[in-house]
Length: 143
View 1 (tube, rainbow, N blue to C red):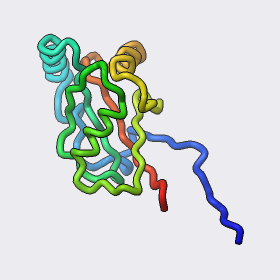
View 2 (view 1 turned 30 degrees about the vertical axis):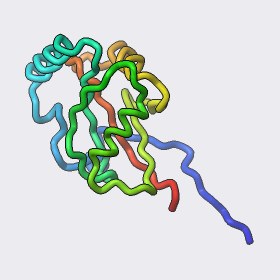
View 3 (view 1 turned 60 degrees about the horizontal axis):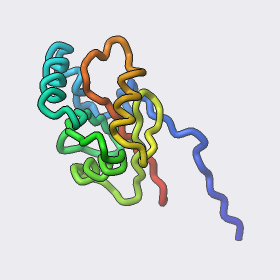
């Protein structure tokens, strides 16, 4: 008996695709640039060792209870992913979650402080706030 398994060669996440992500408005759409800068500066001054993170989920993951997280800079990305999974209502154990930042996949063992420093160096000119934006995409791995 021959069993053929197909693997996707490239797993990509296009954060501009409206069909991929929830129709719920993103944090950038609901808050002006001035509001985001003010809030991120307030958070960074109050908690200098923590990173303000905004999570955007794709529609296959279902709803997430909260979008903003305050993460210590000395924890790994997998710890953040664990916290995000606990906030999801309809998460299926057969789904894998991949984290993307600046259109690159995040290694789960990377410290959040290193991810944040890299994000600040490579962010777009229009993103002057101090939030770290992470996109979550799902992939069925067991069927």
